[in-house]
Length: 168
Image (cartoon, rainbow, N blue to C red; front, top):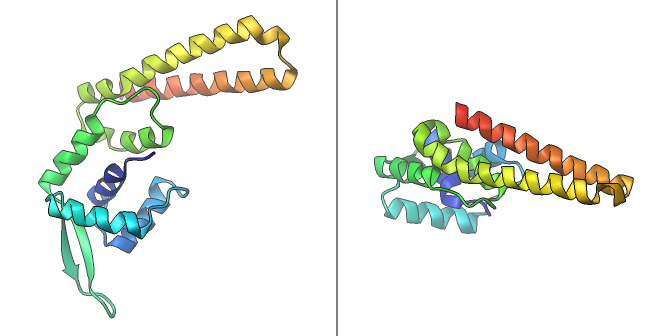
């Protein structure tokens, strides 16, 4: 499950917005399949504003004023703390990708601390999967073998992606 604070703070960090625009920005940039409903968004914005992580400023609009949210220094610090938190190897891929969007804003040392546990886990997963292929491969149906090989390819691709992130 994606970290709503990370997504909301991150989007406001990248582009100050009012609530409706924020939902649109999330849908268009983070993931078109990730939807945050008003019952989650507006209480989260109110909570973040109360904590001093964001600041809402009323802006005149057509017919009604809109509250445009900007990240505060405290909010930026909190966002970067979330990004720098070490992750569990079984992190949801979507959540990792959202976190990775902000890796440019933390030190390489912190970035490596976030990525390495996942990298080591993926390397172990590849080794285990290759051993399974060697042990059971000749007994698998052609389709089951194709599925296994696709999984191996995806794991290798993930490892390459993580290696690239660690080198940047």
